[in-house]
Structures are given as C-alpha cells and as structure tokens.
Amino acid sequence: MMRLSPLPFALLAVFSGNPSWSEESEEEDPAARMRLHFADGSQLSGALESTGVEEALVWKSPLARDLITFDQVEAVQFLEVLRPAIPLEGPEPTAMVTLTNGDRLPGILAGFQEKELALETRYAGRLQLPKGMVERIDFIEGSTILYRGPKDLENWEVTSGQNSWELEKGALRSNRYGAIGRNMGLSDRVTIEFRASWEGMLNLSIHFFNEAPEINQMNSDSYMLRISSQIELQRRVGGELPGGGLRRELFDGPVMGNRPVGERFSDQRFRRSGSALITIYADRSAGRVLLYADDRRIASWEDGQEFLGEGQCLTFQSNGSSSAAIEEIEITQWNGIVGQPDEELESDSDDQLEFKNRDKAFGSIAGFKEGSLLLKTAEIEIEIPLERLRGAAIRNREMDQAKRELGDVRAWFRDGGRATFVLRSYDPLTNRMVGYSQNFGEVELQLDAFREIEFNLYPTNDFSIDEDLLWEGFDLES
Image (cartoon, rainbow, N blue to C red; front, side):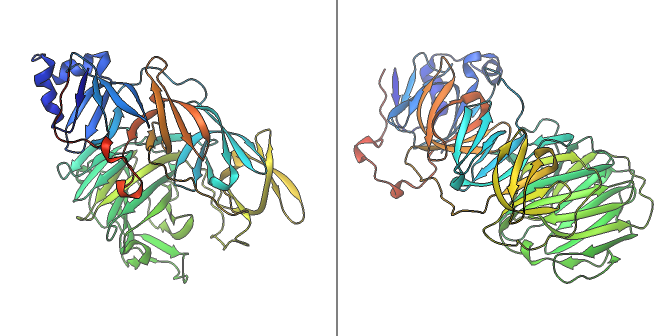
C-alpha cells in the first residue's frame, strides 16, 4: 500500500508502471468510475475503497499497483462519481425539502407531525427531519416536467464565447460574455424557473421559443428577456431586435401601467451581488409573459402582434464579465392560470401554502393525510391535496440549524439538491456511506445517488485539529 502526502497526483503514472494508460482506457475501466479532484488542479481516476472522519481515504486506481492511502484529505477538493454502479430503486422524488442550513433533500413527503417531517427517499430510506430544521417544501408533482437539471452538459451547446460557460456543482457558471442553450421541447405554454446567483451586477439574457440554441442564427420569432439594472422583454423577428408591439405592466412597486417594452425599467435587486429564484411564465399563443423574482411578481407583458415563432429552445446569455451561476432549472408545462399579485404575509408565525396558480393560504400545518396537508386556521381545518400545491413555507416555530462538524462533507444529488453530513464510513461492497447530521441522525446513504462529494468545507482554524496528523513534506511507502 502506498501512503501519499501532497504532490502533483498526475505523477502517479510514474509509480504505476503502466505507461500504456490513456483517457480512453480510463473510460472503459470499471475500476475508474470515480475521480478525485485535488486543490492543485490535478485529478486521479479510480474508485473509493474506504474513508471516514477518523480514517484515512483509501483509493484504488488503475494508475497504481497497490491501494493508495491519503492520511489526510486537506488536498482533496471533491470526489466525482462518473458512472453509477447500482441503479437507484423506487419512485422518482415528488418533493424537495429545504433545510435551514441550505441543504435541499429530494424525496416523497410521507408524514408531517407536530415535531418532525418524514421524507421517503431512494438513497437513504425514510428520513425523519426535525420540524425546526425545515424551512420549506417544494412540490414537483402534478405538472408535465420538460427538463430538470442541469445534471450534466449533455445536449447543451456553448454557442458564443469559447469556454464562457461550465458546469460546476450542479450549476451553469459564467464569468465572461457568452451563451449556452439547448432544445427543451418548449410547449406553447411553459414555466421556466431557475435560481440565479451573481457577484456585482447581474447581466443576463434569457432567450426562449428560439428555433436553435445559437441566438445569432434564428430565422423565426423568439423572445429575449434581459435582467440587469434595467429589465426589458424584446421579441426577436427573424433574429433581429427589436420586435416591438410588446407592452408591460409592473406589479412590484408603484404600478406604472402598460408601456412599450422599449422603455426599459429599473429594479434595484439586481444591481448588487445576490441571488434570486427567477420564474418566467410564457404563453406564445396569447403573446403573454410574466416575470417573478423570489415569488414576487415584477412585471407582465402582452404582445400586441402575432407571434410566429415555433421554436422549442432555451438559451442563457451572459452579457458581461461579472460572475453568474444558474442552477435548479425546471421547465414545466403551464396551464395558463396565475393568481393575483402577491400580498404580504398575514403573520410571521403563520405557515404559508402556495398553490400552483400562485394563490396562498395561511395557518398552521397540522398534519399529513393520504396525500394531503392539513391546514388549520382560526376558523377551520381543511385538507389540501399535494397535487394542488406548489410549495409550503414553514414559519410557525423558532428555527434551528444543524451544527457544523469538522468531518462534514457536502454531497450533491443527481436529482438536484445537496446534503451536508459527517462521513463516518464507506463500504465498497454495498456502495453505501454511513453519515450523520443533526438534520436526520445517522443513516446509510447510497453513494450513486450523488454526483459529487465535497471535502474541506470550512476553514481549518474554525476547529481544533491535531497538528501531528497534518502532512509534512513528501513521504512514499510501499
């Protein structure tokens, strides 16, 4: 067994005695279905043999004759699972539970009691989540889902700006001018939702109903929504701007009435670093587009001319050099119904149920029964089927947050979302990890449910570390 301290890990080919190794042979080797990524930018393919909070990381690589042991993992950034070995069993998740520490767990809502929430999962069985650590639930059942991701860059095309977009930790990221798009199979009425985060000022254009991902090669109508310090919607006619004929109405702030879209309007929330859940409702047959940010309606537009575009593509275009990330993209068919402009919460202590048509109900979620949430108000207790709900914000008690631990890793799901836990052990025979978090206790987790396992989440000076365990120089034993 080799024991390694930090070095450029590509040099392991020297020790492997395997000069014929290549990228192609790596992809074909079943023992190379994972990849370690190191802080110096190097990578090492292979498979995890064992690891844990009180154990070394042991790695099996086609580049080495023996198992490789890393006594410390400070140099390891993350483990990438390239090809799942064991398919997940069970139904697809229909809910995404957001916790107070920012984790998002996919699964099926199976219970909602006074003190805890039950989530049935394909990766860890049934999780019991303390209610005080649950921030909200988003339901993803009941609509025809056209796309959810990104899980990879398959079918995405970077159409301008070489290397302007990349996939990192489940997010499309850009820090320069460029565009990336794909055919989403957009229907006539769709909901386009994604979470955007940015540094500095956001400067993003979203093209939809275009016939090709390449925005400069369009021969039919499409819409372009630009979100920056100024917000505007334009109709591209045969690839040319402006289209004209669009009128808008503002909702978030003083009502401005209907005005030509060429008259841009400002929104302060996008002028400085931040993040927002962006939702676009688009109806090409009616020429209607609505824009929401964090569930608050910003504006709606109605096209005064016939829209002739039949394209099914969506393209994101970064218009500047500021850093931007797009994640949690979900494209669904839309029934054309939207509720009235949002109102303020009746009380900070009320739970909030959000319906698919954007209407809301307030009260206390009293339980879960046969696919329905029980909502108790001052006057009545009612059952609301999950198929009618878009989400639920949990607000009726003091929030708590899971404590950060020295051995925490952050695991990114293939289905979207993430989980933070102490990685206590891994068994290569079952391909399961044992993890612990105050969010769900100690559980076994299927490694193949995740695409990345991120190490070294926190600065080491936040914790007490035994200095005798730190690496000192280069040491190679065999």
